[in-house]
Image: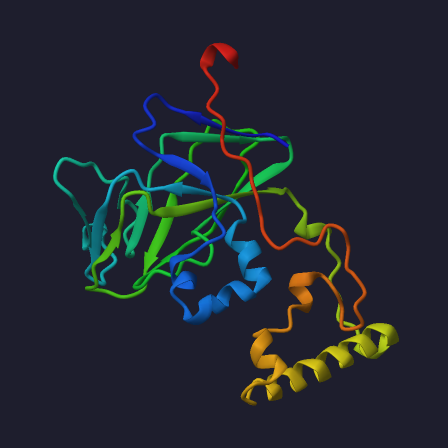
Amino acid sequence: MELTCYVDGDDRGFEIRPAPGRRAWMDSAHERAPYRCTPLVIANGFGWELLSPVAFSAIWNGGQAKDGLVVLEEPGTVPPAHSHFGEGILTFRMPLVFRTDPGTDLIVQGPINRPKDAISPLTGIVESDWGPFSFTMNWKFTRARTAIHFAKGEPFCTIIPVERGALEKIHPRMVPLSAEPALKTSHAKWIAARNAFNEDLLIEGSQARESGWQKHYQRGVDPDGNRGPDSHRTKTTLRRFKRVPKEDF
């Protein structure tokens, strides 16, 4: 699959990178415990992040008018965001046009697992395989009269290619667990083992205290020790965007 980013003249300092697996809030957590959650770590590295070229702040007065949101630039810089829609929405503009393979969309959303106080990212789905359009990334203030700040190099957007109509092809259903006896038995073993492990965590010097967590999912094994598929992973590693000169395209 190809994912191409066309730059309209000067890229104005915008950078794109594979989303890293680390997060500052996870690094500072007690014993870095959030990293024990493999699904969380996988999601951290899912997609490519767009980084703010400059630092700036913004504040919203709580009203619906466009001028109710003010962007405060630092001296000598031009912020990439402004108030375009009103309603307390901060809009990032980018001199970039993304093109995907036929039938592939882009999920355009906020950085994954990067909570930000007083403002929340909005998500869009862009048909990026046919039009000459750029797009914006939008954030909605959730609290008025609270200044927010984006640092230089801080991620403000994540893009994830997805097959158009993939979700529509899914036939979701709900089935009693008893319909799959082997799964029910394995699940019951896992529940029992988890409960016992959590009880042992309360005992000083226990094996559970020494282990910290059970690690079944991280190791890719079920409670009986059976291995999952070879595609099981504990991190996400994406390729970087390669800059291609015009004459080589």
